[in-house]
Amino acid sequence: MTPPPPMLPADPPPADPSRRVDLVLEGGGVKGIAIAGALEVLAERGYTVNRVAGSSAGAMAGALAAAGVPARRLVEILRGTDYRAFQDGGWWTRTLPGMALAIALRNGVHPGKRLESWTREQLEAHAPSPVRTFADLAYADPDGEEIAGPATRLTVTASDLSAGRLRFLPEDAAAYGQEPGAMDVAQAVRASASIPFVFRPARFTDALGRAAWLVDGGLLSNFPVEVFDRPGGRAPRWPTFGVKLSERPTEAAGPVHRIRGPLSYAKAVAGTVTGFYDRMHIESSHAVARTIFIDTSAVKPTEFDLSDEQREALYAEGREAAIQFLDGDATHEAWDFARYVERFRS
Image (cartoon, rainbow, N blue to C red):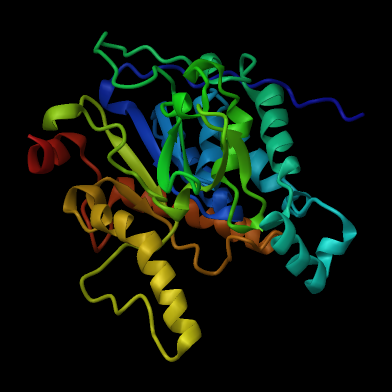
């Protein structure tokens, strides 16, 4: 048995409050490697993770970051993971007829058990202290300010198909008859990362004893960038950075959907339904100003058989995007927290 790597110390808390940062991480399947690259740059620049919200791949990376896994270790984990192992299930699911049968019988090809066990294994092996439930990620506001919702460092989004709504876990734990602190982190991440039809939906039991089926949080909102904003429009005490796995939006951008027939029309309908909520936020200038946009269009979210070159490209894109965000380039100014607050939040 290969011995586990030596434990790395957690990043120390920043002396400057503006170097404390809340993170909102977009989902994107195997593209989480790019998120790790961006977080590594933030750590190198002295930023320390305070709280994290994530969907799908963002929930996977976010759980580790919220648990105190150092960014450089996070990079090692996500770059070194064999994502093909997430395609669990019988051999017959490797065939087209088998995939169709699995979708017809179980609403998804892969059971998702390996995805859940992977999350649990990484938390046990790399977090500075054991993490199994959200109680292990308890959060106390550094200024003693009252916290809306559960006091936890991690928020995971999932789409509840039975209730037809977006769930924030563990805040919505009561909907499933659970206490927020008692909810299992790996189960919540598995639900958030259950790409429809690729993975079977995660089965929960609601407070009335009925079955509830949860899938990828990105189905309803892949990027809830406002989740950590202070109520009442009060100015932030430290920044919230979004990490989005797409190009920076521009006014000259063409239409998202090109409709040429019934299939492209159906795709456009689905894309409009699943993307409208997030686009409302991204088109807000304050959201653009605090978001790291990483162009990962060369890789599909379900491209589990990543080559070494693709892994390196995702990692490099994440690092480069974070550097451009912090230092500025020809299209936007360098990040400055005081200027951001004055322009958008004062």
